[in-house]
Image (cartoon, helix red, strand yellow):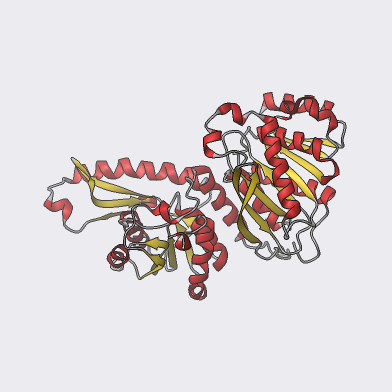
Length: 448
């Protein structure tokens, strides 16, 4: 079984994208099923150079038997019904309309959460590749395929990393083709076929859609198209610190100028959608990135560990030693990107690392938790805070006054602590990229 497992959804998406290369000539639209299907779909869209969107569908359950689906609704008022069930169950038109209104409102709410104010990617007349992270019964995928057909899709290709063969066969009647990397007879749960099957959040879905929209945006007339680096080398890694093994992700673009090691904030992990978003931007700019878990899952359940800055700093120091030993990063200067309590850990670790760490960036950080270590930090430090994060902004102003190294404080207007406002996280990524380029070196020519 271990040889058949995917490292995570992103790896599954890259493998699926390779299998789907023949469809690239059809200029497809890639549609992910949120939430778990979206990271897979994001990688498929990148592999095919295709626009990415999501489809939100809601099942219409029979009155008194909600598990029995009599149809589904999607955005734009699209409704598909089973050809015989509503009549055979004697469901009235009023009941159908009430169910449709209730579920359509939920569809609209979720679409707004995921896509914001961007319009849906048109599917009428297009080949649509519908992506999920795996199939069990296939009920949601079947409903989504029918809604896409009702919206005018020319062809619907269902693409998944793993599914039972009987589900693949049953769905063949609802789509034009099913592409599945591996079929498994006995599937108790989709997650058993992934090493990392952490829950995908609404925020991650929204950020992946925003990244994809930016990457596929047309170049304005008269402007040269943006030069992008080649796909980075990405692999799962493990950072050892004593008996503890901490999983991580290392991405190294060709010609990388430096490696940025991320320290996530309280209650988060290497899968933090905000850190993943900033890391992706840095990778496109030619920086290698290392995201790893500072705590094991059992450790993270104890909130005292989340605020144990010496412990977190020690884990970050272990990751720094690991990067110095790894063949892909050992010759690269290192910097830290810390968020919330992770920023305190980054400053604490930098105070002990000396010249081994060339720059620090803090996003919505708690530098005050580094205590007296602030005065001994030598690495140039950038503090980024949201303009509406008033308490943390005051703490960062106080920390800036205590830091003796080169230091700057950047305030992102209108942003709150999590930088969820439109454009706020992009501002963080731009500021971080400029700071690291200035202090760690710019990417080699052709790498960005």
